[in-house]
Amino acid sequence: MLNRSYLAVHVVNVRRALCLLYRDIAEVIHIENGQFANYDFRTWCELSVLRWELERSEQDEFIRTVAFPLQVPRVVRLMRYDRMPQTTVRFNRRNLFARDDHRCQYCGKRFATSQLSIDHVVPRSRGGTTSWDNVVCCCLRCNAKKGGRTPEEARMRLLKRPVRPHSNPHFLAKLRQPRYQMWQAFVGRLTGEREQSA
Ligand SMILES: [Zn+2]
Image 1: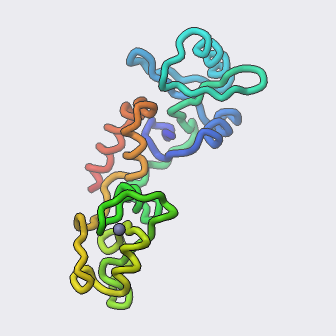
Image 2: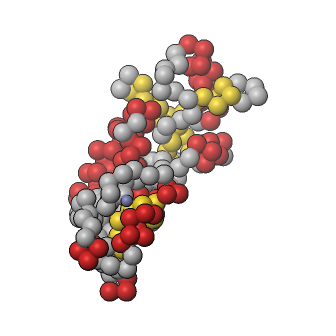
Image 3: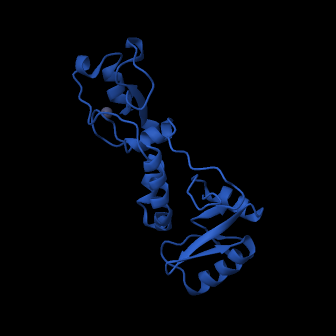
């Protein structure tokens, strides 16, 4: 999702994007042959039908409504939203797991979210903080094995030293998928913004 000045500000799901489109709060930004085009909801609906019939690509997704196929937009712009992108990455489970690629930072294996927990490298009982540089993604088994000890005491080695990520790791993971290729056009602006503020 872009703000009024075409800066990437949020990642939202399709349902939310379509709601904002329908209410005329947002418009679709579509890139074709290197050209940007802006569409309101009605025009996007009409275009969706044409694209469904004539030029669907493998990466396009459509929602089959009762009346017509509606293409899932990849980029929408909030036409009256002026706030700037957040320059610090919010500390939460989702972003932490994405930073560590869902990989236990002790045994190195990847796990589903339900099989992962959060480990304080320096335990909280020893004054370890809940922050980017003291918390890692950890499987339940390694977490139980480590207990309330430091990695040295437990004789466990971290894959890498935990640090605060510069860009939203959840966003970067999506960016690597071909279907979100259109996002690339806005990433330069986003990272440029972040470098300036860093
Ligand atoms: Zn593990």
